[in-house]
Structures are given as structure tokens and as C-alpha cells.
Amino acid sequence: MKNKKVLGLMLAGIMLANIVPQVSFAAKDVDVQRIKGNNRYDTSIEISKHAFSKSDKVVVVSGEKFADALTAGNFADQAPILLTEKAGASSDLQKEIDRLGAKEVIIIGGKGSVSESVEKTLKIQGKKITRISGNNRYETSIKVAEVLNAKNNIVLANGEKFADALSAAPYAISKNKTLVLTNGKTLPKGVEAKDISTIIGGKNSVSIKGLENVARISGKNRNDTSIEVMKQIGTTEKAVIADGRDYPDALSAAPLAVKMNSGILLSDDSAIDRIKEFIDKKGIKNISIVGGEKSVSKIQFQKLTGEYKHQSEKEDTNSKKYPEKVAPNDVEKTKSEIGRDLDLSKFDINTPLSQREKELAILVNEYRKSKGLKPLKISKSLTFVARTHNNDQNLYYNENWKDKRGLSANLHSWSNKGKWTPVMYTSDHKYAEGMWNKPSELTDFKVDGFEISAEGYFEADESAEFALKIWKESEGHNAVLTGQGNWNSLSVMGVSINGDHADIWFADETNDPAGFFK
Image 1 (spheres, rainbow, N blue to C red):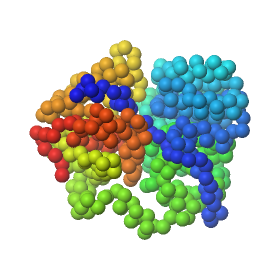
Image 2: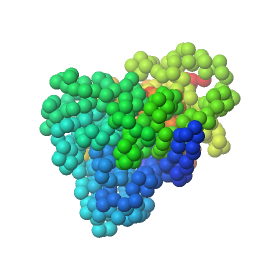
Image 3: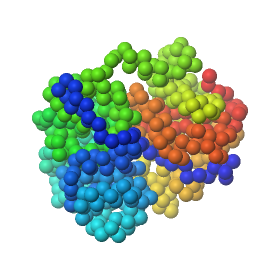
Image 4: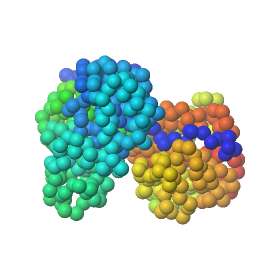
């Protein structure tokens, strides 16, 4: 089976935006418009069209990896930020660059993020290419600062996670400062404490000796931090709202926010009430939502426009999350037994599914049912593997990981920090065996397993639905979920969703020595 399934589908999860062009709605003296395309790449183009009639420069960054892309926000006062696939520059991307009349393309990130193919295509089109890259995201951010002649008066944000940096870029520009990334524990090489004027994020994000007296802007989470940053930008009647669980839309929206003399509010269904309260208090009258309804939901839109009806939405949400075949008391039992999330530092093979894990399993099987497929049994062994990997990803996974050949390693990699064989999993599947055999290595499960994985913000209320959306909108992942081709014999799965990662393991084995969750 493993040879049959050596496919390029073991892709790191790619978060995609949703469909259709810009729409506008006005209610209660508040104008709310949505800017979106049929994916993250199209959305970045739609934002560019909305914000720029022309531009001598464009910034091109990866739509798949946030590491280098985050610092692109430093150019938000100069040029649109357009996303590209690693494989090549799409015709739509080229058309937008031509529409803008751009003569220079600034690529941020190395060839592992934005390929040489993209560069060559744009160079053939007669564009001046300037690539800014370093050995890692921190060095890249320093090089961006050098290009901008701004290595002091720095705004510092954590580069391991994307949220604070997304909020930081429009703020930095509004204050004539420059965003630089840190690992949260040390200053980037070449940066001194005296260069730092502001830290974005709490002490859990950035805690560096010598910076104790530096001004800090933070909230209790990414959403509240974006509100606090917005307050510091100053008086504004406009705001940009983007999905706080993923980076592409918010990154592309930075130039729009700068043109509006505003910032970016990072939202999700659990945060929209606080954001709406802030908007009302500040008297903000013009709101631009970037991304489709699966990024910034219809519920959020309705709350912003005043059209939201609490009771009907509550009923709709319940029916969506908990299909009729799932007994309400079963859901409640899960809540009381183990809560919304699982403490990944404390679990064994028999630890019941958390509420969020159960939601994910239900949604996957409901999706399969809609395609005429049988539901998958939930294996205790595969769930143990998924949880173990999820914990490892949250603690140690780094997008700068490479194998001994220097090839980038994706989300299917395993660190050297646990009681397992480490794996640097690359796109050519050179070391695939080390991933496949994790079920038999970690449990008594006798056959190979296969994983789909996603990286994002999976702590909000709709995170299970968000994870499924990521996989459904990725061709390779969707093929696994829907039993296409060689994946038609899958019969069991194991699930884990926690922190910044979601993982599902599959196998075509009908027996599990550890048993199955009901």
C-alpha cells in the first residue's frame, strides 16, 4: 500500500480564502465591504485592485509559508503585497503586475519560499527583480530593514507565530518604525537593545533580557493585541478586519490598512463581539473585511452590520456542529470529561476525545457521508499518534527545518525531542518510511498510517470547521478525505487538534489492538 500512495499529497496544510468579488453593505451608518477572491492568491490581487490604481513596485511573497512573508508588511506604504505559489507565477499574478504598471518586483524570501521559476518568469516580462532573503526569517527581516535604511527605531514581534507581526506592520509604518522578527528569546544578530522602541505581544511571545523597560503593546490573545495596536495607531474612522487564524489575507491587506490610515483587526467568531464593541466605541464607520466567509464568517459580517439575530444563529450553529446522529448527552459528556481541548502533556492511549477532536471527527465523517462514503472508525492508536505528533509540532516544529541535503522539511517531520525516530519529511518523500511507520513505532498498531496536517490558529470556536476547510480546499488532502483513487480503502482514522496544529492519521486496517472510540 505504501508504494501505491507515495503521492505529493502529504503537503503542509495550506490555508485558503473563499470565493467571489467585493460586496458592500451599509447599516446603522457603518459601511462594511468584503474584498475576496476564490483563494488566497486571488484575494491578494483583489486587495491590490482595491488599494492601487498603479504602482511602480510590487512585493511578491509566498502564499504557503509565513516565515519570510511577514516582514513584507514593511513595504506596505510603498507597494501592494501579492501572494504566489512556490511552483510559479500564475497568469493572474502577471496580469495584476502589468495592470499596476510595476517596473520592479521585490521578492521577499529565499528560493525555498518563492522559487527561481517565479523570478525567471517575471524577469522575462521585463521586470527588475530584487530578492531579499537571509538564512532564516530573522536574518531576512534584518535585511529588509537594511534595504529600508532602518536598523534602529525597531518594532519587535515574534517570528515563530504570525499574529503579532501582522498587527505590527501597519503600526510600525504609522510611527515611522520598522518591523523586525525575533524568536522571542534573543535579539536577531546585528540588533542591539537600544534599537528597540516597541514590542508587540505579551511576555509569552517576546521575553528578552535587557528589554524590560521597552514599551510593549499586548492583549490577552492575538485578537485583543490587534485591538491594542489599533488604539496606538490613533484616531481613525476606518478599519480592516482579517482572519486571525491564518496569515495570507491580513498580510496582503497591510497596504490597504496603511492607505486607510488604519490597522488590521484580527478576528474570529469568538472575538467578533469584542471587536464590534471597540469599533462602536471608536466611532469607526468604514470597515473592509478581507477574505471570504470561511475566513471571516457570515456571522461576523452580520454582527458588524447589525443584522445578526442571536437565537436563529444559535440554532444554526448547533445544527452545524452537532449533527442529529450525535446524541447531545454524548457531547456534554465529552465536555465534562475532558473539556474543549486536551492537555497534550498528559494523555494515554485511552484518553477520551476532547470536544474539539470529536467535532473534527464528526465533520470529517459528515463530509465523507455527503460524498456517499462510509464513516471512518476512530482508532485509539492512530489518535495517540496524532496527539503525539501534534504536541511535537506545537513545541518544536520550525519552518526552517531542513534535511541533511538542505531540502526544506514540512509539517510531517518529527523532532529529535521524543521517544521516536526523528524525521525530516521533504516534498520528494525521501524519508517517507520514517513517517509512515510511526503507528507501529509508537503503538501496537500493525500497519502503516498516513497523515494530513495543517498549521494555523486552532483555538477558536470554529477551529474544527476551519481545519476541515483547509484540507477540503487542498486537492491532495481532499483526495484523502473523499477516498479518491488509491485512497478508497481507508477505514480508520485518528484525530488531534490543538494549539497551532491539526492532524489526522488514516489507515486501511479494520483492527486496532487498543480499540476504537465510540
